[in-house]
Length: 103
Image (cartoon, rainbow, N blue to C red; front, side):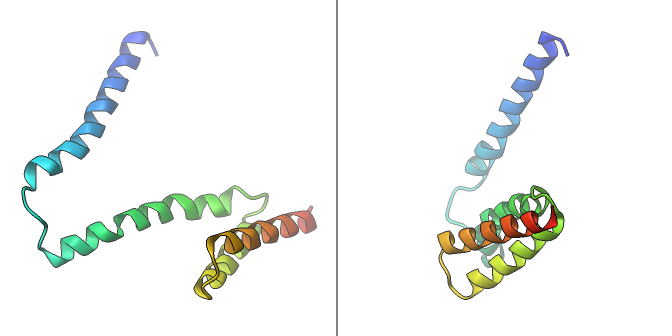
């Protein structure tokens, strides 16, 4: 890739990122009253975080089995209202122990 095309790619990235942020501010003047749109916008950050996090939890371990089991146990621990740190510590311990046992 030459220098000219790298600059074009960077400029396209800047334009795209700014359009995504500026266009809604220009189009939506008042508060959003539609119940469906409000609930959709409420859950977008959670879904985005889940889509980025769950695959990496499974695929970055030495074996996908240990990541999957840690994910399931982490969901159960979170369901039982454990805090973020205990759930993360439990998941890390499970992955460490399972990967140690597998190898």
